[in-house]
Image 1 (cartoon, helix red, strand yellow):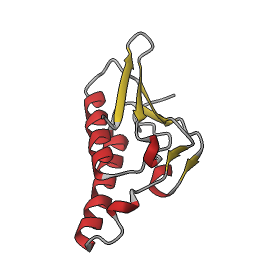
Image 2 (tube, rainbow, N blue to C red; image 1 turned 90 degrees about the vertical axis):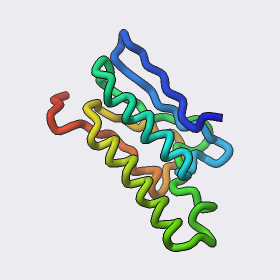
Image 3 (cartoon, rainbow, N blue to C red; image 1 turned 180 degrees about the horizontal axis):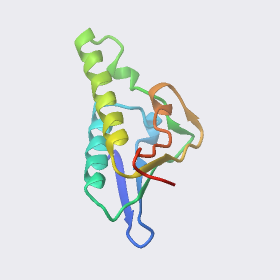
Length: 124
């Protein structure tokens, strides 16, 4: 099962990235973050896309870091998760597109870091 679903609407110059793990309330696990970062970088290369909307389904937008990857883990493992989260957020902030989080329901901790982003060179 893919944790990120990407759709590109070429005519509208919009793409969506849907977090796809509602059972875990779209917790930011290593796997989800890796897929999200890959999708962001793939979209960054598509000059035909101007806006990317990050969305999810279910009662939560994102519950933040996946606590099963934090609890009872070594400090190195926890640090690795936080680094992966930072890398993903950096990829979003460096992307040439405008990013908008379509937040429904709860968004906690790192899950609320994915808000709108406009590259400095873009004028809306």
